[in-house]
Structures are given as C-alpha cells and as structure tokens.
View 1 (cartoon, rainbow, N blue to C red):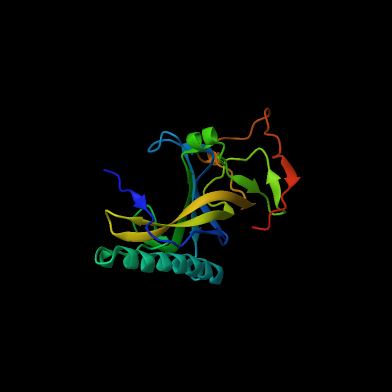
View 2 (tube, one colour):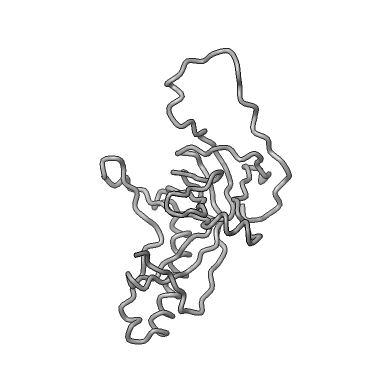
Length: 210
C-alpha cells in the first residue's frame, strides 16, 4: 500500500535553483511509466557535499523542512511528537554498494499526461549555458553537468511519520552534455554515412533562475 503525502501545516513551498552537479538517470525527454502510468520526468543530481554551494542549498531545504516539522508537531499535538525530519538528500552508492562520498537530490515532475490534459506544465524547460532555450532537447547521459530549478514543496508521510521536501522539477540548465547512447560508443567503428545534425538552440531565455 502506497504511503500518502499530506500537508497539515501553513508553510508554503519556495522556488529554488540547485548548484551544479552530475545528472544520473536523467529522464527529461520521455516520461518513465514503470510505476506511474501517466508518466514521470525526473533526474538525480549528484553533488559533492563539501562544495559551499551544495551546503547552502542543503541548508535552504532543511530550513523549509524544519519549519514544516515544527508546524506539524504544533498542529497535530500529541500525535505530532512522533514526527521526525526526513533528509533532503540521499547518499550515493556505487555498483558494489560502497558509499562514494557524494550525495544526490531527486527532481521529478509527475503525472505528465494528466498535466497535459489540465493545461499545466508537462515538459521541462531546458536552456544552455547562455540561457538560450534548447530545441530539440537531447537525450542526457549520465555524468552530464546540469543545474535544476524546482518548487521545493514540504510534505508529511503519515505512515513513516516523517516530514520532508519534494523537488517538483520545472527547468534545467545543460552545462556540459554527455550524450546518451544506450551503450558504449566504443562498441562500434566509425563508418561513412549518416551523421546527426547539430543540436538546434532557439530563443534567448530571459528567466533569471540561472
């Protein structure tokens, strides 16, 4: 049975811009539908926890979460005393299950099909290093350097008695692209024939998020 997120507090979410980090499992073009039939666009943003910009980002998220936790305890009274803070990030582990020393943040935009039907944002706005909109959006391979914009939304989980922050993804700055190939390019030899056209970049992006 899935846990249900609720918000019994008055504090509102905030718009945040992440530090730079490495993209992992970036689904920015085609929604993932394995666990959500309406589709989810998402990415993990892997960062060095000792980077000052990462520390500042964590502190901002923790401040919002802690306000929500305090309000949850006050609103729910005796029941609220059971609630605890959920970490705003996750530790990264390698294939052998060993901690890498890095952390990652999860950004997601859920229910893509329903959002389209309702006329809400259903795609991630992608810009380049000059803040120009990227079109078409390329497949983003692991290790690409990106920055994300999201709505940091506080929530509570009744089943786990935790208060956390979800990062509702809206925009991405593509700083250094590692192209996704579905496998290693070294599996093939170069041949004469089809060559992909250069990526097209359109419209200056004037938003100040990046």
